[in-house]
Length: 127
Image 1 (cartoon, rainbow, N blue to C red):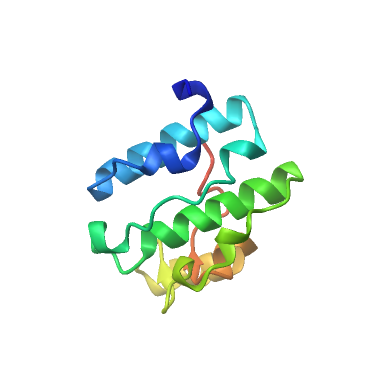
Image 2 (cartoon, rainbow, N blue to C red):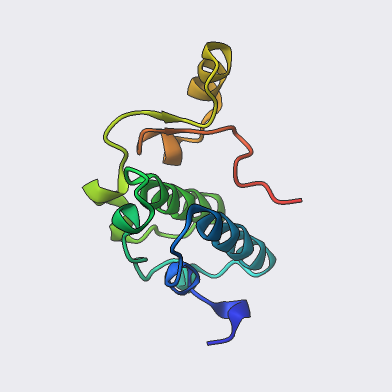
């Protein structure tokens, strides 16, 4: 499959660092935004919690991202996004200050909130 039509699972398959994860997600979002296709979201990516030692953040973020993209584009979300291993055991905030945490609690998209991730409303926006 060409990189243009690479599934999220393929994009994340060789990730071994947090910076590689961030780069892979951003690149996938750019490609998906240019050509939204639900088949690119269906295959479950391998879990990265042990590889990245991030407490499951990357796994929850991937599920939140897919759930959000499906909601925005009117696609049925794949069942893997609802797996317990794709949810943070404790709340994780994209900001540390109490004032920012309060804002994130209010504006975080539902697809992220249900997985205990609190991000800005435009967390997936790409310039």
